[in-house]
Length: 230
Image (cartoon, rainbow, N blue to C red; front, side, top):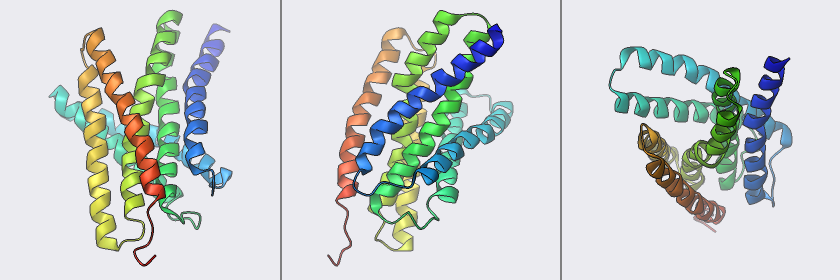
């Protein structure tokens, strides 16, 4: 009974915060909202990306001894897999028809990824009967790790948004720049909280919240992207 209750709590604690953030970010696309079924599919694609990331990160952990390099590679794996989910599910659809769409789909996939990742993190303390620690873990991931996924993936979406009306070469270059920025941000957050003191961890969360402000500005900038001939 306790195990089933713990599992249910972990799932809810992992998914509900992502749904709250999803509601918040979808307000950035109120004029031409994306189909709910495609958003749901993209969210689920982000969840599936976690499963692939687990295997890939385990392989990296087995062959890379340096902690800094290992955490950086893990960040790269997660950002690439989230983008692949978006590219396969959403970017090839007929509904990808305006610059802001790339940011929306990248954010949705990131929230799907964070939902399952958070569930797995919370499940650990719960399985040991540490309810208080599970609550703290859930809250910290709500304000920190989830936003790292959102901001990092949104940087990729923003790069695609800026390149929406450009040629293939420009799109490829901006995609690489967006991926590089996403990996750098994600890795910097990971490295900043490893073995960090409480004050340092709070500072890491603070600059992530600062990045959220920048992200809101990016949304407005991408909304303003127009074809050159207009």
